[in-house]
Figure 1 (spheres, each protein chain N blue to C red):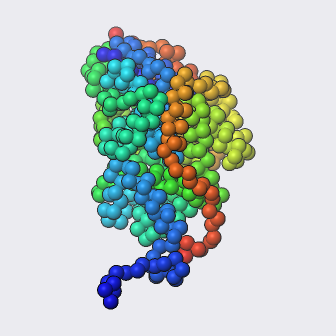
Figure 2 (cartoon, rainbow over the protein chains, first blue to last red; figure 1 turned 90 degrees about the vertical axis):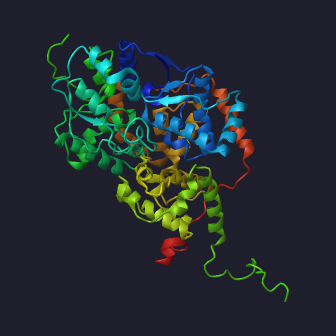
Length: 290
Length: 227
């Protein structure tokens, strides 16, 4: 199995640990990753609000490059990239008017896109291509004693029906349960973390983050496991400020799901970028099983 | 009397007929419908039942001055300016819960994007809430470097919006920096030329538009004027 890999801007800086742990886990599982050469920003949620056709063209440049490289599967780990690239495929398929405009823009840049690239999320690839059983067989130690709140965030499951339910996905819950961890009941698993509102309307975003952390901690989670770099930063970096502004003190580690998978697979902490987390996570782990 | 059945329609020098939309509103409506048409399924806005599922599902509707359901109601009532003057479209964080749950399959989130584009193009924003600056600066950074650069974007935004807030962010910034999670200098992608070519192609397609902020007169338009 080999996939083309589109890291996205966040994974280069604030979400570096996600990039490092993703590469480490895919390496030990024997899944080949080739980084898309000279990729550009997908446009995120903000380019779309300025110019639709140009934002689609900019995002389609990545898909065109992937297609040119002869790959059918493009892995996008960041939720915003994932949803925007999927949306690009969908809009270009459904709207001939946009397709012709975007084709024209791409042609000016010497590119061409024929809608053949499937955009995949690494969680989807792990569960549906590699398989939960294969991951469990490859595990070096059990995650027994880890109590986690599986937080999917909004954009990997919505707006279109993708690889899991749009409001109550279970993929990550099952994966970690199979590895011995306990996924606590977490009904807010796809509720919004506020995203960029942390910059524009901080009071609103802090309220949302507070709800998520409160739900996770009251249901007995020792850590939150997320699939999105923006969710990770919002949930982790503002816990002190929540204490100041809302009088709530939390100290809940927020991990990327790849980091926890890497722990099960016996990867070292530096390989998984654990030192980059602002709130240190200590594994309550028994000795290695195998 | 051969032409008696043909309605002459209102002439510009005549008084406006009651119920007709003012010219500014007609222009906004035309602009919004053009943007909405580009959204696949955007025409389903006409199917709205006003059930309120969108408002009930929205995690941030409590902070909006006009709820998502009211946005569609105001659009129907011909009061788009009132929507653009509200904080609502800028508060949406695009979590797509409303779109997922809408029983009529209305693409509410995408329609809010169409409204944002209408606002950007006509220069109609809520008073003292220059949230659109974030999107504009994001586009600037991406057009210039091909990728987003988190620190540059935040710097550009806060310098215009609220420089003092930068001081508040400083401790967190230092913590992130020490963990190696911030890069100081943006780097251009190799194919930045291709991005520039696409932008020029799009400029060539567009007709010149006036992009001037329209002054706001309290109570002169829409919802507030009626109630």
